[in-house]
Image (cartoon, rainbow over the protein chains, first blue to last red):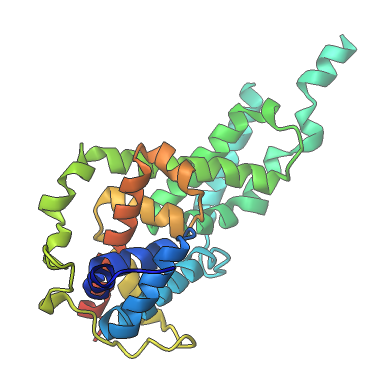
Length: 95
Length: 198
């Protein structure tokens, strides 16, 4: 895949586009051309490289948060559960 | 008569609501908290989930487990909250530029990071970096400060791992808007983390 000089210059300096592609790539596939553009950009931009590492980490953390739903310390109070039980019995008797 | 009666009571063989609280209440509660991060609200949702399930007992055919069925009801209720929150501020997507403008992050002309927004290392860049509880708390705080629509998009994608077309449909946004929000949210979250992580 060939790119002319001005195209290379454009992506090499465009951090907005590079970070956009970094985000898109983590969710969906990006085109071969976009992959190449991103590679060229990251080769010369340590700031976006840092962004990418931190972005990966944030996604990892969020994933962990989502899957920590079996937290055993998180429980409903006994009182609330009793209320729920009464509510369910009421409804069942009514129908 | 025999037939009609056994039909109307058929769910009784498949599910027993009297056991729901003991079996699933805590699970549903922690599931809800992990999604909306608000214990009081999560408690109400558990109650609403049981109520909704009782109302459609006859729809439960035992194709999935009770737990899966109840979780699906809860999940739909959570999406409903996302949607309501997101629509509280009308036309928020249009206001994105003025209110939460990306323009301050990147140079308008060449797209380069503006100096005061350039990501700096936080000492967590290695792939195997340990994530402390404190760091997660900072992230949660940063997430709670996001505009409602962004929060909904981000949570549905990264926490619920919902399909992109589903998110676009539920929140009534276009695919291109989706990607813009995903990008801007991350740029904002990242900066919030850097500012608040000392």
